[in-house]
Image 1 (spheres, rainbow over the protein chains, first blue to last red):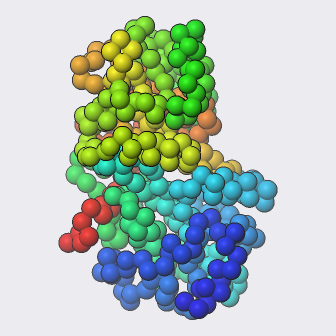
Image 2 (cartoon, rainbow over the protein chains, first blue to last red; image 1 turned 90 degrees about the vertical axis):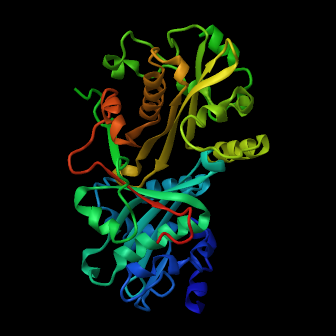
Image 3 (tube, rainbow over the protein chains, first blue to last red; image 1 turned 180 degrees about the horizontal axis):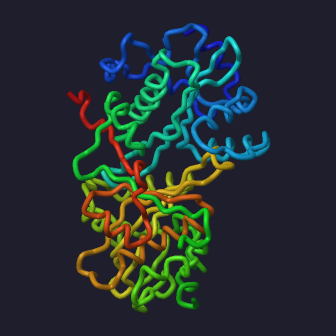
Length: 198
Length: 198
């Protein structure tokens, strides 16, 4: 904890309050990890799980995202502008793994929250944009980052958290406690890239 | 338009700027409606499509939502508090159909937007909580409210809009231009209602 606190001096840099990642309910997901690791004890002392920072543009954050999908041309100014929009809006809990030995971001997952009126003015969570650098395989870091934001959504009071995924990833997310609910597990899409879909 | 403008005097009441609903690109979805209707010409002069208002608690908004799922015990103070959270946050575009003859909300759909870094700092949309009063069937009002928020997401610059749905609703959303993308149309869920999922 001492090390983590010393990392948290620059509060203004964080996308969200890093204290939210303290004391997550890891007992809830203990069965999914072997050996057990947590965001506060990620298995290697040089790994740090924390909210995205404004300075992560210079730690290769966009390069990690580009392992997931097309990022395109995003300047430092674009990044900082979008970061501030997310922070001002709230509800964007992008959480990263930093390799502090090399000062690089090596993994990321996002929790996005939505206010509802249904279910007594509930909060709903969504998992988005999960990626871990391929060269760090075998350390359960994908599980670690997914479960960290899952437990964060639980701590924030979400009544449920959902995700969209490809067929090939269904077994992986099942292994982390996510379920395909019978008759209610479809995601559909409308894409606007082209002006005319025909 | 004159009638609509006269309805828009109480700007402070709206969840989002009602001007955003003007001049949506209905040509993009014309093939899905017969006869053609739009949010500005909804087929009956006593129907009004507009953003949710703070005063809609007294127009039966929660009763309409309860046709969709469990709403639970939400007081007027709870409603107003959640409404202000949504307005302050932004990204919550709840859009309703009012029957102005009886001063009641008879339909609703929500567009929720999310800021991304991927795809050149893109905006993503999601369709949530679609409901139309059963007694208004046969007027294409479900299509009207879904397409209204779909076109709103396009106007706001979303690169895509997605939805989660039950098996039985897949053909319906297909008829409105949404697609199940091969190999990538799964929604999975983690529910936290119970402390222990076992």
